[in-house]
Length: 393
Image 1 (cartoon, rainbow, N blue to C red):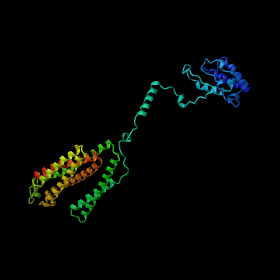
Image 2: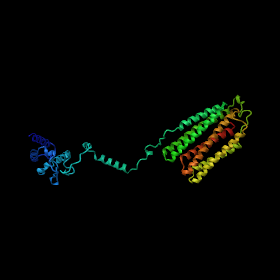
Image 3: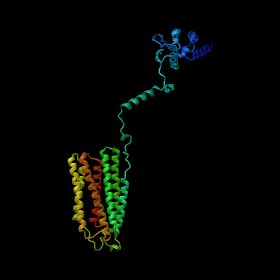
Image 4: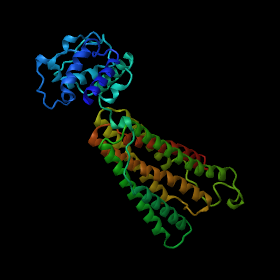
């Protein structure tokens, strides 16, 4: 009796559902099935597997009593689940029926959400198809920088530069033992620079430098050139200041009394012609397309730089004054010596760029930076030659 009461209560609940198939005369048929078999039919413990002949359709509120028969009790759990799955659907949607023998798939939690607009669905599908057809994004596009591992070269470069400056300051003041400190610092700085540049070239060969990084490397060369230009502005301004207003310490005369200045002709003019030719050959190395022409231009520029250094060495060895002979000797040797040091660095850089180009046959960032630096060296020499040699300042 308790089972029959529970069945009647369940049927009354189902009758209140909109679009329910448990309405009308079908109620008495299902009630008799529940009354005869109780909830054992729902458990399906003694029921045989449903066959195709026992299938019936639930198609909305128009379902009649013909679909319910005595065989329906064997498949009642499946039909009940199918009917519960079909609740909430509109009667005119798709018009397909749920077969008793099929156990519908359990919907996900997303099915409980309200339906998405059709335009949104189409937009998402188009975006998904476009993402599938698009090529994979390169790592340099998502992150256009190559993150370097921890490197010891910045620390070694700072220590070498500091040692060089301390040793040079002591050497200028004739402090014993400071010359060895200066040479050790210069050697350490040179070794660090070679190791650091080697790592940069290896990274470039491995393709770790993106286009943005190459542009930033050239921008770094420009910043270095600006800093070097400020250095030469200070050195040349000291020559101009002393030459235009000599004080009593130089006998109110420039060059000072007893100093035989080096004229604009002779070796100075030859050095100017050498650097002018190197400026042209460096331009050829950048604009040329034939690898043989590029290598020849780079070799010519490097050779001209070595010729300039040799000529400057001969000038120093035959000069009638030294670096300690009055402010004129100090400003002359420091200014021309710094320029000669830059010529040495530029020649080494061009030689390294030529060695790298012989392997790749491509105008790398290393080559462009070397030629740009060499142009700076040539332009600075124009100011040095005009102020120190030609104007005798």
